[in-house]
Each structure stands twice: as C-alpha cells, then as structure tokens.
Length: 461
View 1: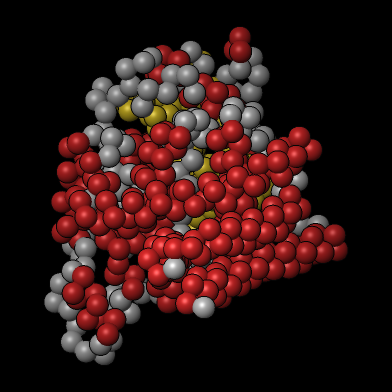
View 2: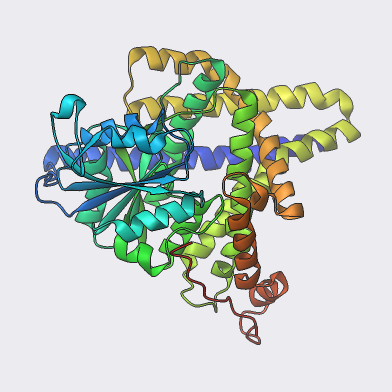
C-alpha cells in the first residue's frame, strides 16, 4: 500500500490539472466559435493599422535569414518595416540580406513584387542577441515591436494575427505567436518534438492566456507595445531574455495574450544532443528569471506587486520544479522500499501519461486543424511521447540543479563572455537576498527589508 502514493499524487495533481486545463480551453473555444457565428468580429485594417516594426537579430544566419525575410515580405499586414541587425557574423549574413534589398526596401526576386522598408545594420563585433535587439529597438519607428528569430518563417497572416489583440484591447501589453515545428518530418525525434509543440504551446499557452498566467512570449515570434519595452529597458543580456522581458512587461501591463492563429514555423534540433543542449538552456532560465531576477514579484511590499504575478511565479515553480520531480522521487522511493513493484509503477505512469496525452491530442486537433498526414503522424508517434517526456523531465531537473549550483546560464555560448559577466554582476546587484524575501513572505506586516533592487538601464547593452 505504501507504494500507491505516487498514483494518488498523479490523480490529485496531474489528472485534475490536465482535465481542468482541457475543459477550460474547450469551453472557451466553444464560446468563441458561438460568438463568431452570431456576430463575426471586424477584421483588422491591414491597410491603415499602426506601424509595426519587425526587429530581427542574428549571428551567422546566412542560410536562414533570407527565408525569414521572404516570408515577411509576403505578409498581408501592409504598414510594416523591418530592422535587421547582423550581430558580428562571419559567414556572409549581411551580404545575403543586402542581396534582397534595393534602395532600402526588401524586394522579391528580380526586384519585383511588394516593396517593404528594410534597414540592415552590421555590427563588426558580436555583442549578443540582447544587445543587437536593443539596437534594433532604437532604430525602429513603429509603435508596435515584433521580435522574430532569424530561422523562422511565417504564415501570410501571422503579423496581422499577432498584432490584432494589441489593436483591439489597450490593456494588452504583449502577444505571443503560435510556434510549429517546420522540420517535423526530418526524423523520429523531430516528429515527437512537433507533437510536444502542438500540446504544450497549442493548448498550454492558450490556457495560460485565458487565465492571464502567460509567463513567456517566445523570442521566436512576439509583439510588444513599444512604450512598454522602452519603459523596462529592452532585453537583458544572456540567455532567457525573452522570458525576462515578458516578466518585466507584466509589471506594467494588465494582460499578456497568446494568438493561436499567428502561426510561426521554427526549426527544431534534429539530434538528441542538440535538443538536450537547447532544453538545458531553456530550463535554466526558469531558475534564473523566476528565482533570481524576479523573485521580488513574490514580495507583497515590493513596488508594483500584483497578486497575479506572484501566482504566476509560484505556479511555474510548483508545476515545473516540485511536481516535475515527483516521479523520480516516487521511483527511487519504491526502488528502496519495494523494488519488485517498480515495473508496475513504471507501467502505471506510462499508461496514465499516454491516456492524458491522447485526450489532449484529440483536443489539439480540434483546436488547430492540421493536414491528414500530420494528424496520422501525431497519433502514430503518440506512444513514444510519455517516454520522451520522462527523459526530458530528468534533463529539466539537471538544468535546475546546475543553475542553482553554479549559475550555468552565465557561461552559455548564447552570449559573448564579457556580456555574460556583466549580466551576472547586474543580477547580483539587483536581486533580493533570499533571506529578505523569505522574511517578507513569513512576516508580511513586519519590518521592511533594508535591501532594494538597484535600478539599471541596459537598453543599449
């Protein structure tokens, strides 16, 4: 009987959470479709909408950046400009971009087709993506800034779709696009990753958007109000700057939204080694952003404290760190107490995860219609998904430990070493001491901590 507690943990936390999320997303979609059938919403004016500045930075992206620019030139949104920052590339990225420009405009093959204003800036030395994006912000003229990655492509209506919530609702400060794996058919690994994107982004971010708990606007495709980005100082250096920017914008914006119809195609690593490296970098950022840079969001006496942001931080820590470790703890506990029950526990975990994933996949296909071949591939590879999730839970836990133990994100090749050193120094000077934070949580009406975060403007980092 003592080995059944992992099952009860799963039933209480996972089943209720997954089914609750699915039910809420389903009801919201039914309500939206009913409202659309009764009174179709007015279309966004793609001719006279606000000027949108698409800012893109890249280092050694000569092969991918021209394709991204081609998909941006074909956007239906008309009032558009593009800022491209070549961050010290050595592979001819600037030359590949310049070949698509004529007199400051992005043009089609042979110089024909739609002309989109495009400015190219080349940096002689690599400064990191954050600094390059901040330079792009300084050069941009639009009141809405759309950040995109240099290896992404977009549906023709993607910019219009991601901008629409900002135009329709002044309380929305930022909007995230919907990411789909472009190279899903490359091998078995990319097919499973494509399934993960469909479930975690297509359903997970819809839910978080509906309850206003969205904590990251992906750097691959996200729109922000320019005044808010300037108010918070732009992107912070080193990796995880998209999640950091989102949390800082949330301090001033009542709502952050997810636009499921703003489709962006991105390339996933095609090797297990590459994917683990990517996920370790992503997962380390949860510790850095939630527990280091923005831990003051948990203090009810800090400036700009809002309960919804505290709930967001606690939710991310609970479901990613605490519950993320539950099966590992359950496995080790059962292995020590009753090793003969380990196979039963593993099978139980597998089939419970498989059942919940199947329910989510059916919902995802209803929410986001896909081609018949893609749907068949999703169902065919679904049995591998619980195994994939279990493996990458271990990767996630390892990433948390290495970030807590040795600040591993600051030695990531994502940014040059001198930028990472400056970022580490900034974070050490601006963070709340953990003792003060815990004291504030335990004694909310006690003495105010003497330490305050140091303000720092890194807009031109």
